[in-house]
Amino acid sequence: MPSVNYGIGGDTTAGVLSRLPRYRSLDRAAAVVLRLGMNDLTRRGNDDIVANYQHILRALPPGLPFVVTALFPVDAESMTDPLSSVSNTRIAGVNRALESLCATDPRCVFVDVGPRLTDKAGNLSKANHVGDGVHLSDEGYRIWIEALRSALLDVKERPALRGGR
Image 1 (cartoon, rainbow, N blue to C red):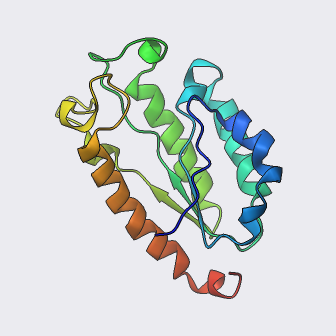
Image 2 (image 1 turned 180 degrees about the vertical axis):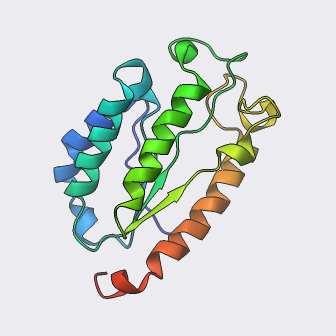
Image 3 (image 1 turned 90 degrees about the vertical axis):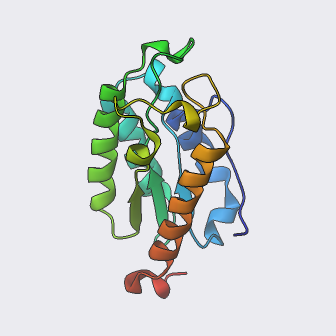
């Protein structure tokens, strides 16, 4: 699918929120995918992360459908600093809040591929990360992209949004 990636390594919800008004392509976008918050975990609490998401979602143009992607689980055994203090329990808490937030907006589809990425212990499986316990491997990305394609088709087909875009 044709797309523009505004991702910046190490970025946070606060960074996206500060730049969002400059993204003129939002007025022409068919949909937006939001996958951020992991880097926030070492800088702010869950409530602040979710509050920033709320501000971001409110700043998106009316009628613009979007997909919110859950934070991916981590493999605590393989992780290195600075995220070594991040736990899957905390990630699950953020994800529950993001899913609830998404449920309040008919433009939103929430995607959580975490269960498809984890091992029996609930950690990001070794096959699905590049060795650092955080960043997805090619296989992990394949799983995520498959879910994104499905979600983008779903969000674009919602009757209430067809006329808006």
